[in-house]
Every structure is written in C-alpha cells, then in structure tokens.
Image: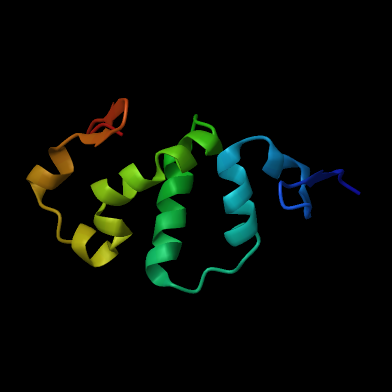
Length: 101
C-alpha cells in the first residue's frame, strides 16, 4: 500500500498530493472523480496535451491562463476560430505558446 500524506486538516491523502501546494486541491476535488461535463472533459484533454514535456504542477499553475486563452475551454467557441485566431500566440504568465505548438 502506498504511504499516505497527512494534510493540514489532518486527513490522510495520497503521498503525491503533498509534493506541491497545487496538488492538494486537485487531489481533493478532481483526481479520481469522473468528469461528466463536456467542457470540463475538453479542458482535461487539452491540459493533458499541453503537459507533454512539462510537469503537471506547471500545468496546474498556469490553468487559469489556459482557461482565459481558450475561452474557458468552450469548444463551441474554439470551433469558430479562424486563421487569425489559430495564428495568434497564446500568452501565458512568463511564457508564450506560438502557433507551432
């Protein structure tokens, strides 16, 4: 059995959730819970794609920036992107993702 981490509230959690402050909330509210909302599912798929080569901590730290850049991951709005939308750089705090991403 995996060792447990005791959170600040005294509750035991998976050991990995104590590795970074962003992980605790993610562990408690999202990890292991089914996603039944299409927009939330699209968000998770996109974030997993952006994670390639990055840590999950980095992705969680920039999550709000991703939400802003992709209109809250509303796939109906993203489906309407034109050439100019696809060509514009995505500016995230302290980094830029260009159209080549």
